[in-house]
Amino acid sequence: MQVILKTNVEKLGKEGDVVTVADGYARNYLVPRNLAIEATERNRRTFEHEDRMAFARAAKEKRDAEKLATELASLSCTISVQAGENDRLFGSVTALDIAAALEEQDIQIDRRKIILDEPIKELGVFTVPAKIHPDVTADIKVWVVKA
Image (cartoon, rainbow, N blue to C red; front, top):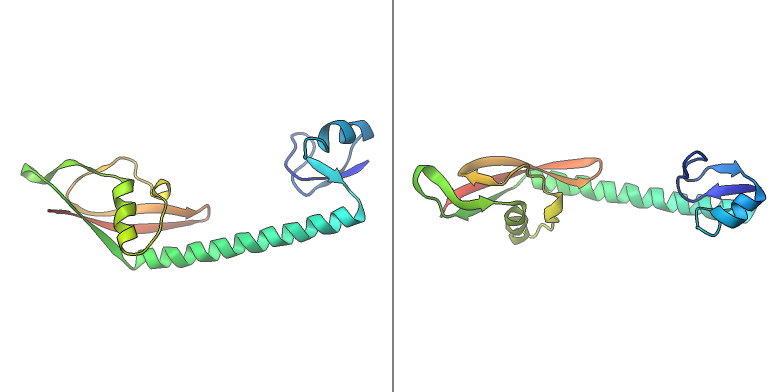
């Protein structure tokens, strides 16, 4: 029996492949677990249509992410914090603080997308990367100033 794989199946194929398998394997394992559908002409057309729609959706998301990345590159955010002697901060600046500062400028970024290896613990200007999309990374200029 020929089936169209809906997801990647180890040792069988990847999503979208048309493979020939035993009838029992398809009926009892692949189809009930929603891993594959029977390769009829109607199912092939439906799967191709869904694939085109998913590709168009992914392309739009990437374009939107690139637009946001150029917008982020043109601005900077300023975070005022309490600092003691030698300009050491009381506490630190985290991704949550950066996301909140960007939100004040009407830019919505999930704090989990802001990549900080460790929190910022001193005054200065920092370039912080943000992974907006799997293929798009933007740099955010962050000014940490004394309050």
